[in-house]
Length: 105
Image (cartoon, rainbow, N blue to C red; front, side):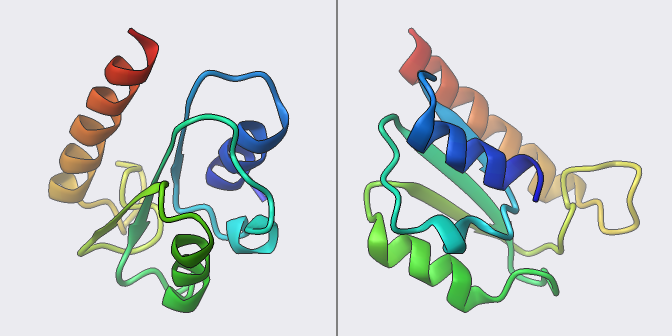
């Protein structure tokens, strides 16, 4: 469990202002918990590690959470990986920065 899942747990349990998570593979295990702050999540449609059903579970439990899908795999935002997708990374980054500016203003 790393980044995206930790962002989710922090949004549910810690005094943070906002959370953005990328490919949080274990978030569905914590879908019964409710974030106390705005949350945005990013997932790759070709992610072999995170089934679409897991993300759909999160979306069903929390329709207020902004969830975005990209034509990319797991780790699409990491330029050191073979799965890096410059297009998806740019779009996710722009969305994340806009979201953070809105909620941290």
